[in-house]
Length: 164
Image 1 (cartoon, rainbow, N blue to C red):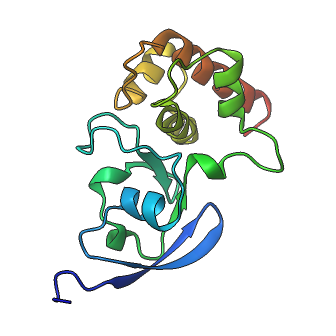
Image 2 (cartoon, helix red, strand yellow):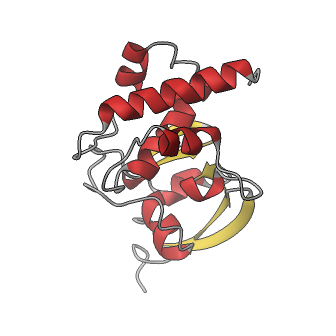
C-alpha cells in the first residue's frame, strides 16, 4: 500500500457513539458515514456540494459531507438523520415534516431535515424569507418547498414555545 492510499485513524462521535475509523486520506465524511458506519440516511446526491442531500451537523453546524474529508473531522461530533429521534420519538422537525407533508419522493428529505435542525439552532428561522434563504442549499426536485418552509416554521414555533 502506498502512502497515498494508507488508511489513517479518525476518531468521530457519531450520533452520540464514539468510533475510531480507518479511512484513506481521500475519504469524504459522507463516504465514512455511509460505507464505514452503514448510516445510509445521509444521501449521496450530486457529490459536488450543490444539492444538500448529504447535509449533516458537525459540532452543531451544517456541513455538506460530500465536500468534507473525514480526516478533517478527527475528534468532531457528527449528527446524522439517524441521530435525531430519541426513545422512539421523532425530533420536532421530523414530526413537522410528516405533519406538513413536506416531502414527496423523499430523497432530499434527510438532508432537508438535518439542515432545518441546524438552521433553527442557529436562530435564523424567524420568517419564511429567512427559512427560504437558510434552506437554499438544499434542493428538492419534487418542488415540496412551500410545505418544507411551513414545516420548518412550525418546528421553530414549537421550539420557541418549549423554550428551546
